[in-house]
Length: 352
Ligand SMILES: *Cc1c(COP(=O)(O)O)cnc(C)c1O
Image 1 (cartoon, protein in one colour):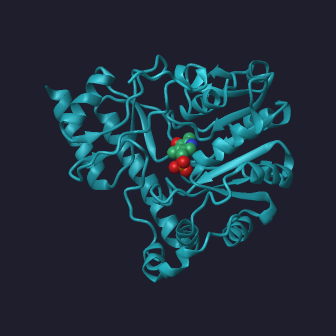
Image 2 (cartoon, protein in one colour; image 1 turned 90 degrees about the vertical axis):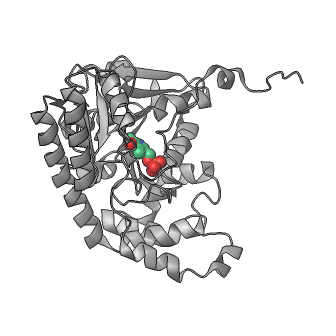
C-alpha cells in the first residue's frame, strides 16, 4: 500500500528523542539513566499494599490537592505556587507549549538535556542553542545570545556534565532575561544548593523537581514545578486534565512522608560518588566535578570504545556522540557493589 505522510512537515523532518536504553534482562549493571540503586521508601510499598483497587473506578484529583499542599509547605510556598506532572518531562512539555511557537523561540545550553531542543522541534519553535564554555560553564554574553527567546531551559546541576552553575550567574539570567527562565532541578537533591528561593524574587522563574532520581521513583512518573501563581494558572490550562494518575498521587505522597529514608539514600549516593570518582581517577580518568548522582568522565582511551567494551561486560553507561561530548562517558553512581564491578571491569579493559 502506498503511504503519503499526513504529518506536519517539521515532524517528518525531525529525529525523535532517544531515551537511554532499558535492557530487558536483570543481569546487567545499569548505570546509564541516572536511576537510584535503592528501592523507594518502605512507606511507598506499604501504600501500594494498602491501596484499595475499587478507588480506580474514579478519576484522580485533577490538581493533586494534597500533594500540592505538602510540597508547598515543605518548600516555603503556597499550593497556588505548585503544579504536578507526569514526570518533569510532562512539565517541560507544558512549558514549551505555553511559552513557545514559531515566533517565540526557546533557548538552552549545549551540551545540556537533549530533550529541550526536541520539545522545540515538536512545537515548531526555533531553538537558540548557546554553547557552554570549554569547562562547561555559562558564557559571559549569555543574555545577548539568548535575547529574543521567550523561554530559557537551564538544567542546574547541568546534565550530562554534572556541574553546578554559580548561583550569581543564575540570578543574573533571571533578572536580565526577557522571558521565562526554567531551572530544571532534576539533580538538586545531590547538590550543595538550589535556586528554589528565586521564585520569591522573580516572577519569570519556574523551578522543576522530579521524584525520578533522588526518590527512586523513575517508573512512577511524578514531578512538580514551583512558580508565580499566574504562571501556575496558565500551565493548569495547558496540562492534560488528569496528568497525574491516582496511584501516582498516593505513592508520591507516601515517598514525601518518609524524609528520613530519602536523606539516607541521598547521602549514601553522594558518598559513593566520591569513592567512584577516586577509583576512576586512579585509573587515569579525567573526572569533571559532579553535584549529581552521575559522573561525567573522560577515559584515558577512546570513549566510544570504552563504552562498547563495558557493554560486552554487561555494564551499560551512557555515551553521547555529539561534538562537545564524544570524548566522555556519563556513569550513574550505583550501589557500592555496582561501582566496584565497574571499577574492576574498567581495570580489565584498560590492561588489554
Ligand atoms: C532525568 C531528567 C529529567 C526527567 O525527569 P522525569 O521526571 O523522569 O521526566 C529532566 N531533566 C533532567 C535534566 C534530567 O536529567
